[in-house]
Length: 204
Image (cartoon, rainbow, N blue to C red; front, side, top):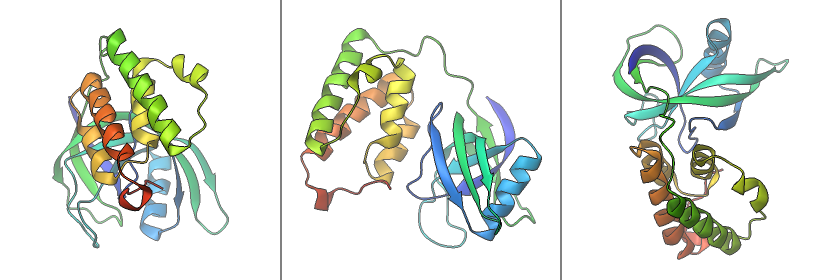
């Protein structure tokens, strides 16, 4: 793992996974400054969840480094951006900075191994449970397209878009390997499918 300085965007409920895309509307002055700075340097921003509300809330230990893949600068200084997940990072320490946005020193995870794939029975179980979950939720899914995704795209895609609560998604991000993440997704789908909409926190 490489240790790098990262500018971060702490945002509850908005998780980014490696290889996935996250659209964001940037309107707060400190995060407009963050995007401007990132565009002038390496286009990279670290997405991480705060543990609680507040001006400088404590952070979870793990987030995901993203690259600004698309940006629309609006006339009033706001931005619409799309972040592409690069790799997970683990917070080493927060830096004392003068910028409006927070910065950390973090360990950047190496690229996932090509060997990080699911066994055929695990893949089948995940697709089967996903079909059940989608049917319960009333989602329309192109299962032909889903079947063509590689294992990482399937697992991380479900982890990012499924309507699990923020704590569950953080647990998915922190899963040690793809197999663990797939197994946890199945458990979460089974759990959330047993609860009605009033009891389920949905990621917007």
